Picture 1 (cartoon, helix red, strand yellow):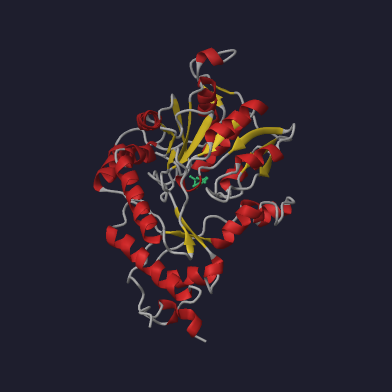
Picture 2 (cartoon, rainbow, N blue to C red):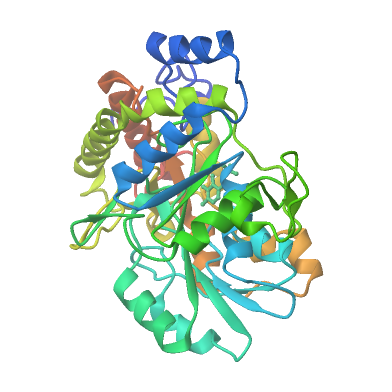
Length: 407
Ligand SMILES: *Cc1c(COP(=O)(O)O)cnc(C)c1O
């Protein structure tokens, strides 16, 4: 009775002929031109374009200051440093993130404490925070997962009560809004990433935004070996050549070459965001009535930046597990992915004593989730291909669907 065509995994024709990745950059001629201009000039590392890029970013999110770094990870490390996180401290974060969020806590010798996610938003559950606080807790690092802002008011209230610093991992959330304000506009320290799959790219790169002058100056110094050239900061100045290394910093500088790309990409950010939001609503519409999946739930007070579109599988409505559905979609040439393996389950963290069962919501989500392609350079036809392939595969593996008659 069913019209379901043969899946590519069973030898049928794939939904599309070319592979569609889950995310990728969009670089145009004017971006390339901007980079070439810097290459032709005198300063290719820390030159004037870094500051122009930082100002543009700060202005865009509505913060006083932005400091660019060689990666989002380096930016997170710097944020942990200026927040005063050190050995013996504990920092609460989510397990449902890229490993770098927790790793930056380890770089400072401190201990990540994983608070489970909320089953609706997949963001850190602020109700879990109370269970994780100890006298050693120094900071909280929430992640705006997929680009949907966390419940910032509740988290900030908690942080204020316990005198904690809040470092927002906004790698997914450039351009996202919380209660009418852009992420990064207020709060202590907010991190953005410019990896090619993120909203804009500099190849590798990242930034911290803040409104605190003391943080800003320390971030700049941390980015460049802990060195200062400023006369008023140097205790005894021996001559014009003089500089001082005052604490152990790193070389985490972004180059002017990369900043030129970033500055050029900033011009396109609103267009990119518009397309991400448009494609996400096409997916919502296509999948909202399918009982085999749950579409991303969005809280009223937020506007997501839609870095990722995750579909949660209702395994009780399916005759196959996530792995089978993942492989079937890959064979249809749809570049599905999984975000994320809960951080505490990686071998490094298991060796430190974290184990399965620590965050049941995140662990269950991990078994049931699929990320489908979402990036501005996709065409509407690409979006339709994804919808068609997902429908084809879900129909096939649906309980009471085609696959039941197979064997
Ligand atoms: C991309 C990402 C990072 C790290 O950023 P890089 O620029 O790749 O170092 C950190 N946290 C999250 C949630 C990310 O998605």
